[in-house]
Amino acid sequence: MPVFDFKQVDVFSSEPLKGNPLAVVIAADGLADAQMAAFANWTNLSETIFLLHPTTPQADYRVRIFTPHGELPFAGHPTLGACAVWLASGGVARSDTITQECQAGLITLRRDGAQVAFAAPPLVRSGPVESALAPRLAAGLGVDVSDILAAQWVDNGPGWLAVLLGTRRQVLALRPDPAALGDLKLGVVAPWDPVADGAEAQFEVRAFVPGLGIPEDPVTGSLNAGLAQWLIGSGQAPAVYVASQGTALGRAGRVHVRQSGADIWIGGEVVSCIEGRVTL
Image 1 (spheres, rainbow, N blue to C red):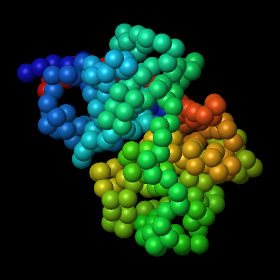
Image 2 (tube, rainbow, N blue to C red):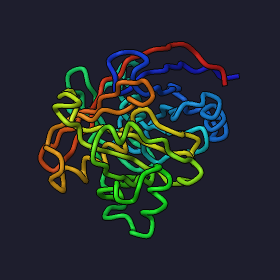
Image 3 (tube, rainbow, N blue to C red):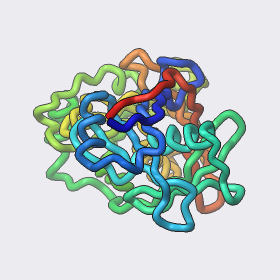
């Protein structure tokens, strides 16, 4: 049976066990789709990724991203984790930026000190959520419809829609109903109050994806990328800010957002927790 190098890293945190864990199988080109899916189901992490040789000369490496229940075309914390592991495994970029190939296309990344950052991919669906969906969103989150200040599609591949609430306290108090949410991929965001919440971050974020076997994702790069495009684009967020995520799960994820020209960069630190080999 083939044996592969393996790492488990924590993304969006400089401290182990405080971010979002990611399983990484390195040089996994020999694996079949069914083997990848089975291993991702077994790890039972929100995502497991497989580092592969690229199929296009524009890319430095290729990644396939699996949840316990299926494959994703793009996801943020696996993108940062893949890049960090690829670099740590001896990968050398051919330019000042790093290009990742995934099902969603080519993603540009860069090293920024201790962080790795990716350029937010274009939204494939944007604009206000249909008003008829508001009662379902409210029921799924356990809030009144009037508590939802805005609801927006922020889909960059996984299918995200986002709800804006008024306070961080409201976000942290949510007890969502997975049955009511169904197959929705829902992000919730609210601003921090500098007086009540401090100045370490400017927004609190939570992500619920029960349809993919992820009741709550600890820290979510793709969602934060979509949120940043919405919030910065509408003037509700500054060009540089930090989002906190994972608080309700005992994590301390920090997502660093920066607009630079036409691009919005989503960055975070990646720390290695487990290294070894896996037999598949």
